[in-house]
Structures are given as C-alpha cells and as structure tokens.
Length: 402
Ligand code: ADP
Image 1 (cartoon, rainbow, N blue to C red):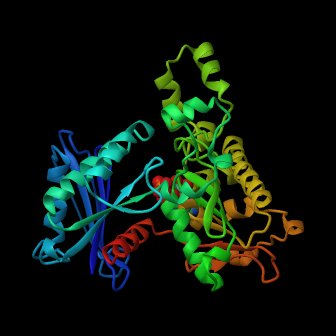
Image 2: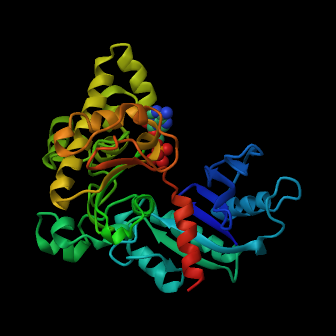
C-alpha cells in the first residue's frame, strides 16, 4: 500500500510518498514559492538510500494546483518516477498544524471537517488556510482516494483544563477559544509510541518527558501514554527559547516595546517570531554555528546556548514534579537528535534525581531508538529520531482499515 503525505503551506507543498510495506519513503520533496513569478521544486526519489535520485527545477506555479500537478508528474514520470499511475496511491494523509478543540484524533476529510478547519483559521492564520487549499487540490486531483487529516494539536487534547487554561477572564476562552493547544503533537506521539516499544510495555503504563527540539521546539509531560502538559501555548510562539522565537515571556513586554519603540503590534509579533530566540541573542539560529563560535570564545553565542538549555531544563524539572514518576526523558528532532552538547547541558548534574547521562553513548548515539543514559540511571534518557511523515501515513492507514 502506498500513502501520499501532504503538508501544504500558504505558498508551499511538502510531500512524501511512502511504501507502507517497508515503512520507507519512495519519494519526497517540496514545491515552494507558489503564486510568485518563479517557483521551485526539489524532488528526491528513494530519499536516504544509495539509489537516491535528486531533481530540482525552477518554474512558475501560479496556484497549489499546478504545484500538485508537478508532484504527480514527477511521481509517475516514465524514467524518474516511483509509481506507474496515481491510482497506485491508496490514501492521502494531510498534516494539519491546528485542529482547535474539534479534533482529538485523525479524521477523514469531508465537508464538515473543512468547515471546522475554516473556523480554526484565527488560531493558525499562517498554516490552516494553506492546509485547506492543499486538501481541496488533492480532492480534485485524486477523486475517490480517501483523505485523512492528522492534527499536530490532537495529541495535546488530553490535557486537563488546569493545564491548558490561562489565568485570564474565562469569557475569553468561551468567546475566542483562547487556551493552550500545544504543537508538534504528531512527533510527541510518535516518540511516545517508539519509547513504549523500547521498554516493551503498553504506553498506558509509561510516563515520559518528550523533548522535541527543532527550529521550533516543545516539551510534553506524558502521563500513562497521554499528553498531560505541554510547553507550547495558544500559538507556536510560547514555551522554551527556540531558533528564532522568544518562547514564554512576560506578556507586559509587548506593551513595553510598543511604548518604548513605537512599534505596532504586527512588528512586535514579527520580531518575537522571526528575530528572537537564539537568533535574537547571537545572530544565528543554527546550533552548529553557535558551537563553533562558542569555541572561538564568542560570548553572545555562549549566552544564547546557556539561555536555551537553561529554559529547557526548567521545563523538564517542572514536568518531573507534575508526573511524580518518570520512566524516560526522550530527545528528538534536529537539535534533540544531533546535538550531544545541548543534551548534556540540559541534563548536567542531575544524578541526585536519578538521571545519569553516559558521556560516550551521548556522543555516539547510533540513530536507533536507544538510551544515552548509564545502565544504572533510574530515569532512562533516550534519543529517538522522529518521523512525522511515517506517523501521519500510519494514522492514515489505520483509518483506511477501519
Ligand atoms: P524544523 O523545526 O525546521 O523542522 P529541525 O528539526 O530540522 O527543524 O532542526 C533544525 C535545527 O537542528 C537546526 O537549526 C540546528 O540548530 C539543529 N541541528 C541540525 N543538525 C545539527 C547538528 N549536527 N548539530 C547541532 N545541531 C544541529
């Protein structure tokens, strides 16, 4: 069975075609700059294998429809293609950033779903409009193929009100849906499932702190396999310090900047979203660059690293108290998988709490779901590569089989 996973943005479409028998991608790529004078497509057949076959081109994609047409043409190309015909695709899984309070689980696309997605646009104005266009184009290009939406917020819908409510007038929640929704739920769920497999027990018997550290980053407290708390807030701007996003700040800062600098609200939000975090402190949001500069004695790079790891550690500490008992701390995503220095800084000196990182295992993680803690560490520290596309494809298959 083959499943096409689509992540449509306002001017881009990321895609991956997976073979569900091998659980491996057959092709993946991204169409960008849709709607601009000139667009781009980068496509890989058999990504990550020795036979990997790359292709890229520049051409205009006036709308998402032309972009998706190009994707189908590449997938079915007589030379470069990985399938003969689009009828080989059994189902389509759409990655959806925000499902509001409507969706606790993946759902089949129908008119009612699209209507609910429209209602959640104010909560994800940069993402959900693009997702809706992606769904509409896919419905047109793949008539009769079942389409499923998998929501980044769904995993966090098990939080209790005490965790997701903000201390603001209750009417704001009732009237506008203002509450914590979380992000990266598909990744938090995937590594929760993988870690339960690692321990060989049902996830309902597991408590974890899951740490997704990419350019965007969030932590979750997972109690009995379900999300109990998470660091992201109403939008993906909250929580820990990220690549370019500020994370949690004193809300009065917004008014203070407006007052002191005369900036309008949009400029302030843009600054907190794109010019803050690691980049705001030291000018770079790439840990590889930051480490190089730290070695050269760059104080701002050191400060950025110290601030980010300090905040991450605070959340882990908070979630330990919330959960009471923790089986494992699990790191994933770009930084979580690739940066032993970040992991070591976050968990340094916690032996009294039963957390002991094995320096050698941490340095040489083998890319398999495995522990980087010592054998006698009461709390295991795992690193598990996330795979959101595979999770979306598996969720899609589960719904197709229902
Ligand atoms: P996104 O949220 O955009 O999907 P990723 O999960 O791909 O982000 O993470 C990207 C980040 O991972 C980069 O900005 C960089 O800071 C970090 N990263 C990637 N590779 C390495 C590495 N080898 N060492 C340290 N950090 C890395």
